[in-house]
Amino acid sequence: RRATPLLRPTSASLRCIKRPISSLSAALKESAPIDVHPEVQDALAHGRPVVALETTIVTHGMPYPTNRETALSVEGNVRKAGAIPATIGLIEGRVKIGLEPHQLERLADVAQNPTVVKLSRRDLGAAIALKKDGGTTCSTTLILAALAGIKVFATGGLGGVHRGAESTMDISADLHELTRCPVGLVSAGVKSILDIGRTLEYLETLGVPVVSYGPTDDFPAFYSRRSGFKSPWRIDDPVSAAKILHTHRQLGMSNGALFAVPIPERYETVGEELQRAVEQAVQESQENGISRRGKEATPWLLKRVGELTAGKSLASNIALIENTATVGGQIAVAYAQLAS
Ligand code: PSU
Ligand code: MN
Image (cartoon, rainbow, N blue to C red; front, side, top):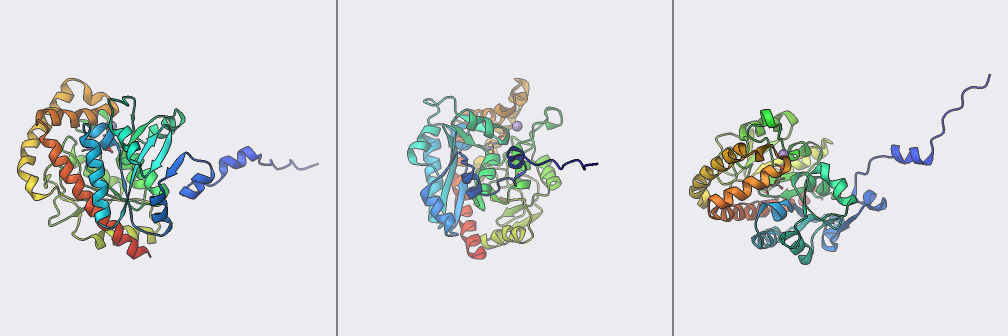
């Protein structure tokens, strides 16, 4: 009797079992719709420091034109620290790693571009296929930074576990992304619109290191230098941060790390005032049902805090992200030296 012939893989099934795309060059070979800015490409090719920056803060986090001005000053701070900024966003279904000024303008001026979407991991494929414009949240910025081989990402606030998540189940996809992207995320902690204690518990469960960057091990709460919670680790220089990332790489660990940089001291007093507005905004969101409207919750809360504080929250927001950009640039420089 003849043996049953082995099934021969067709070229289609071979395609499916090919190794997943894990590098930018492999993605580009597959004609992935990604455009890397020449300056960023050059820096990456030569192992020079690059810092990724997100654009949901531009499209859904700040009003125009402050959003554009802040994105530019943040890029400037990365440069002053000696690194190249790579602001990431989606334009007509193409991923941009490094935005030209007219592309940033297009994402920033939401009155002219009202259909621009907020992109979490689940949205990326659909938004590309449907040729949308979009702002990348921390989650998609992490994915695209990791793909490009960028080791550091600076932003204002990471998403997290929302208050009342025990019933809404609203937990940001940002947290899980830190388990699979080997990128150091530099932020001013998480905003107190969230449940900070549960966010830290969740990060512990996920195995994501949380490291306070500065004089104390307090975990910062965005507008305030203190949340009442401690970080498990504390460092106060860029070389230590770079060593943490480098160690993960040496051990073949795929997760990132959260470096929490407190807002500059002079904003602490106003931070206490902003905290009261945060409490009111959270309460309103629970009463009016916004807290159950998925991706709308965070942008609504950010906007409402801005309204309640007559824009004072905006000045703090700008100051803290300019600060994390500087620290991010310094960490990227230190990492490039370690890794070379
Ligand atoms: N927190 C802020 N400002 C922001 C965001 C969070 O203080 O702009 C943005 C970030 O892009 C973050 C996203 O990744 O909101 C999280 O949204 P969600 O909670 O829907 O996952
Ligand atoms: Mn959510």
